[in-house]
Image 1: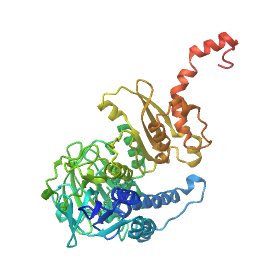
Image 2 (image 1 turned 45 degrees about the vertical axis):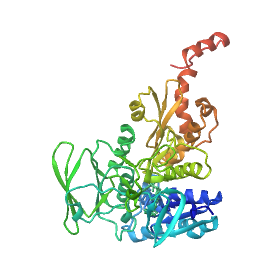
Image 3 (image 1 turned 180 degrees about the vertical axis):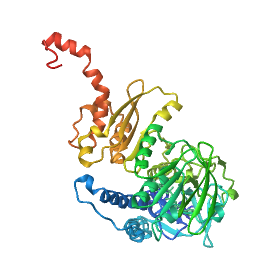
Image 4 (image 1 turned 90 degrees about the vertical axis):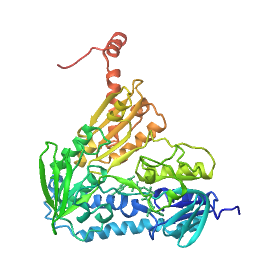
Length: 482
Ligand SMILES: Cc1cc2nc3c(=O)[nH]c(=O)nc-3n(C[C@H](O)[C@H](O)[C@H](O)COP(=O)(O)OP(=O)(O)OC[C@H]3O[C@@H](n4cnc5c(N)ncnc54)[C@H](O)[C@@H]3O)c2cc1C
């Protein structure tokens, strides 16, 4: 064995770290995976995607039951929600997935898994539980934590974040969610549907700041119709713990000072990379405004130390973490230089309806100075949507000057699934005409993808020029009515 104990060492057993660890071990690299907590899986499994999507499913069923009459069913008089039961279901789903991400699974693949707090003592070695462990390459995949904004009084107030949200003992009667990003908005709707009175406070003048304003407003109006209150353009000035209630004072968009009270305050204003306590300052790691300074091959200023997942401070999604894990594997283990390219990174906010996106939206195209045209189609014209009673939302297709798709946003039922067709189209450089001529099964929500492309082509196909030619060559007689 060379001078290092391992070929590769990974700090963090979440989506990014697990991708690198399993890949490296399977390629035959002597792999060390170190996780701070006492189980693998990271935020996505324990406090993120999995519990949130499980909770959302429960909340959506609750919503359907409350609206049974809309589907021609007798009214259901629901008892108040017992959040401990909801929590039990969440834990049971986590438990099943946890088994796939166990220490034994990774050991079988050939990786050594250790639990504890590791600290770099030099550029190739960490100290873990009193032991020195060295590796030729290292990956920092330590994820992120909720960012807590410096609001006056917040340090003396009991608030919750995604860490506490899924194991609450009771359903809060009321909740103020600080932040209007995906985590806050998904949870605002879920808790509201379960019976909590929810208010959202957001600094910007729209929710879901990365999305186009029309799509975000469309969704916000649906949420308002369900009973959620929004204060946009509002700055929290102070928070106070009054015992059973918490008080928050905000300056709203009109410059007025408003005070509100709720049983629970949810802080969800963004995330910060977990870089503290790793001893990075002792090995002269360079930082920039996002966190660790990295190049497009995910290397730090020490070329053998890589970063992947939320710790990069870039796109904080599980699928981005998995993708970056693959890039690290390619660069660190296979020695095939690969750069990150987020051009076609899709994402989805799992509200009902869902809001999914890939590529350019109007905001991003305008900022990049790319001329574009917009084509839309409403879900209320989709037969399956009507049958499902899910008739809200629309799809928005952006084409560049060469009529090539550069981005799609879908606000509608199962938008996260529908965007997958566009993932294939954009990555495979598929022509729009291929979607227009491909047979989609009827009746499906997916027909909306074909329909929006059809809207683009119909102006060309049914043009006066084509009609004139058909009349000229085949003697068509024209309109039979009106
Ligand atoms: C409520 C919520 C909902 C979300 N929903 C979605 C969703 O629907 N879809 C989606 O794509 N993304 C979602 N995300 C984001 C997703 O959870 C993250 O992007 C993903 O977990 C990032 O993976 P990661 O490996 O970078 O970090 P993590 O999964 O957080 O893993 C990092 C691991 O590193 C460990 N660690 C930290 N410090 C150290 C250290 N010093 N030494 C060793 N180990 C350490 C941590 O304990 C953790 O296990 C959600 C996030 C939240 C909070």
